[in-house]
Image (tube, rainbow, N blue to C red; front, side, top):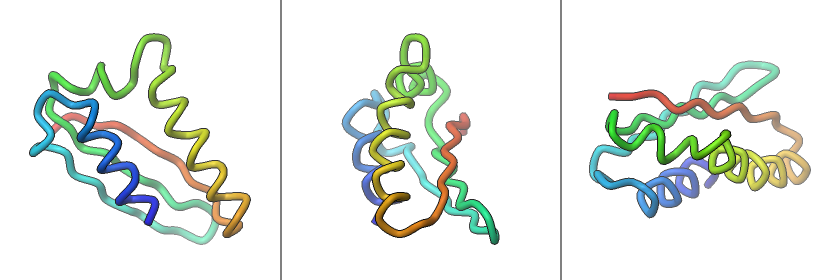
Length: 78
């Protein structure tokens, strides 16, 4: 559910939406969401002063309150 949200949100922002990929890495303490994007879109997804990725993290933190799982999100170029 969360990975689908992150992918759809990123595709709305990205210039190259077909390049967006989301990978989930789960461990005991934290679930890491890795968002792969075209090099040209990485800056757009992070946003000025990290505000765009901060907004995504805020939405994800609401899911943490619901299911008790901690999430971390990283944006990486393809």
